[in-house]
Image (cartoon, rainbow, N blue to C red; front, top):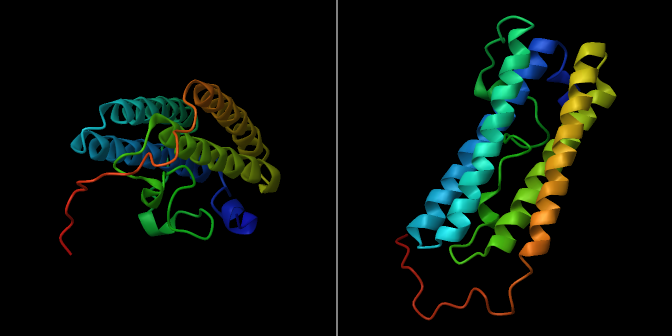
Length: 178
């Protein structure tokens, strides 16, 4: 991550919290999109898992909104104005290219682990780089909370071992029109 760019997104408490709300909102939306895709391919177990992860992201977003209410209204930030890393996407948004219609719960949790780890790193970078002590405190708390999410996903992964070789073999794959 480009820490200088991240820190630019945390020059005030309001701006930082606006970023945190967007981060969690985008994570929830992406998990729901992945869930819908899995359900469309009759992969209900993974769809349910992604919906559960979306729910956790919404809970965290709502918690951030409650904290933000203590500081006044959040500033309006246009989508192109968010300061993430070298991408236009929130650090916690799952990458579609890591999804497969036959993916297992193990794969979904590996994706979630990447997202939660990226979220933790984002908040830790803000805490380390911001010059605002309130932002540093909040970002540190959010990094710790994301660390708890990382640990939770690791625990879940122990219940879902990697599938055997050939997990993605499908003699009749879906047809994609180009």
